[in-house]
Length: 361
Ligand SMILES: [Zn+2]
Image 1: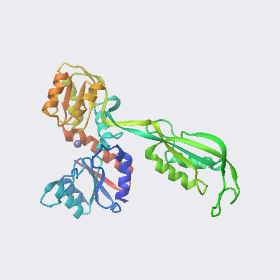
Image 2: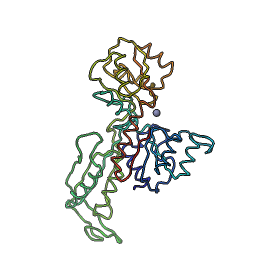
Image 3: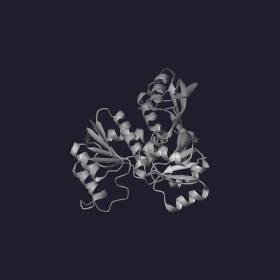
Image 4: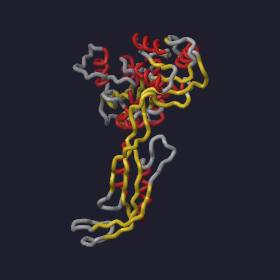
């Protein structure tokens, strides 16, 4: 058993909400964060059938890729099948609903990494950067004898570990002397009220992703022995890991467009893949964008892609690709995103061993 908010914490660790595109619904959309969940349903879309399945099996929460409430609802009526009727039936059956949409497209290991993996792409990187991890310098002053313990807790909370780097607990220590005078009312760890204290201290600094700083500061305050802790947090102009939409990478071997189509059809188990572009173009570098991502074509070309695999391609986008000699592939909206939604279920299953997680197609 877990609470809805515990499920949300796991979901946020897998598909961080700060990676969402601006204006995209995110997180918990329906339900009570304190409610208990023994069974969770994961799906691509919260259709009436998925909601009914959740109710029938006693699942108290649904996590979908596509947001159930995408546009603000002006009314919630049982007579409207989707989304109003589904929202109403979830509320009546006490089923919480959350989503991980563009954050799961962008996150490491998400929809687009899964697609890239299914095609065997190598040297995979984002097509369009949407987020550069902001970094902060966190500096704290600690009595020498407590410095190991304080730093240990800060590093456990993520201080000095930039996302994606193979180094953690990175810091810089300098020795010095701290001074302070406790005033009446103080209960100093060192020194006496009314007397200037001089203490051997370390100044410990680290570069830390901004998202982790609240946890690092909380861990530091919890163990730091001083009544009033001296620390600085300041922004840096340099940034950490880049995250983005789509993925681009190299195929293990050169393919012609028809061979690429066959490869996609078997990888996605879908036999209606459509493509435009020169039939004799050798394809080595491929971009993927699960769902409707034809807008990534200019960025994909800039990254050296010979082809873009996405869905919901419009006539003028096909025309545009054709005129540029670019191979544009429509591999189906659900077909390009379902493997990622299935992966989300696996990740939640691994993160939440106390609850059962079903994937519903
Ligand atoms: Zn989609």
